[in-house]
Length: 384
Image (cartoon, rainbow, N blue to C red):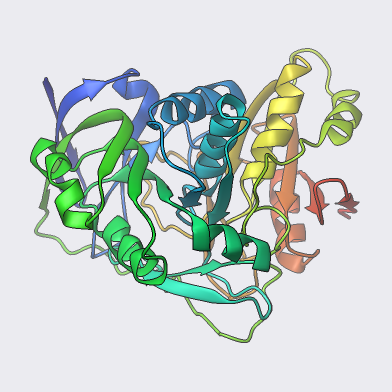
């Protein structure tokens, strides 16, 4: 057991580390949030979200969390939490499929956008800057979920378990046949007592797997956090370009990696060049797959994503690029720890159609835009 204390602009964070399968500094840094509900952030270094992560490091976490999932009765439904853990969850699901090729599984992720006229249900991430989350189900996905016996929920961290509790309550009400539950997180800071009581709390036999476990305490500072701009302006009937092709409405297989695109791009990357593959908002896993293909071709690649999460410039956040919202809600978006000109090549992956916001982002980073319309149809958008 070890104790770590971090004094930050918003207060003092204390961590007790009980078990670590990876080095603490390799997994997380610390950041201060512009959020009155929670003034701190465990900033993951292996998510490919707020910090540049190699595909190799990301895949190691996917495999580790998948290996901690016990034998579960199927069908097994995996749900990843928007927006931060979408790529993590899909990576864990695909790692689990590789070791369970005969199993029947379904992956979907929550979203902060409505997708067409598809059926959905809603739950709340109470401490979030954007609390409303939706789960959409295709007809095929709905049929699998209706017969599922096990549920696996994936998030980057667990601190109170409240978001899990909100989602589990909704799922159990809709699908009372569920028998078992597993939680997968990079960092589990709920503490040993809370972990021991998960089955009773959630009403199902529950296990949890994590790369690092312990507990935390946070003493908020006397100075109030500057209120952040609104991070959710939901309009029920607005079309935001959120695709139904990559896991948002359910997928029962691994996505096909963009091998042809990687081979094409690799021809222009010379030895020593640095490459950033950048996801946008909720569109994360395809950028990881492209990065992994480029890495396999010997290229020096890291993966990140833009985000709507407001974080202060402190600690593990050294540079902030503000960018417009490519989903069109008018929400402030950010890219952390990337300075314009830092990388020789920036490949921006997006699910939304070409827009001034994307062109602005590409201009800021001297990057190239790639519109993923399906796993095999990827169009490069000219950047003037």
